[in-house]
Image 1 (cartoon, rainbow, N blue to C red):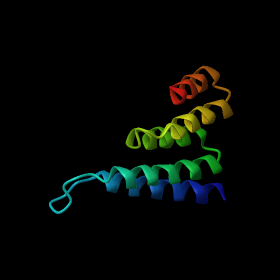
Image 2 (tube, rainbow, N blue to C red):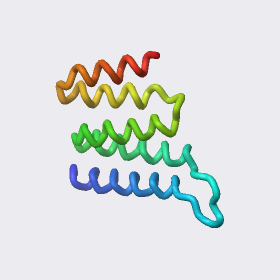
Image 3 (tube, helix red, strand yellow):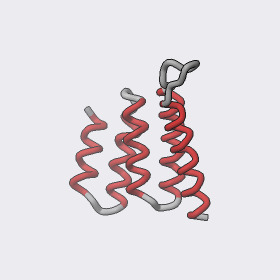
Image 4 (tube, rainbow, N blue to C red):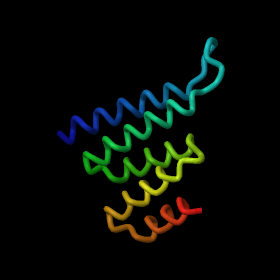
Length: 97
């Protein structure tokens, strides 16, 4: 089950990266779709108990959804799960600002 979720998460990460690429016919990156894929990847990593990778995916989601404070808060919660309290507090406080 965990391996399946990790594979699914990596597929979402690849889709997100693809959304950010430009080409001759696609001039602008699709930030909204990329953020959505990163969010899906984060949930998959979280379900597989891969909290560091979930944190990274949540932070990438937040980067492309600059107004999405929930993603930053969730990154903090992943650090809390690992008992990394200083880092958890940093992210949760950032989400509150």
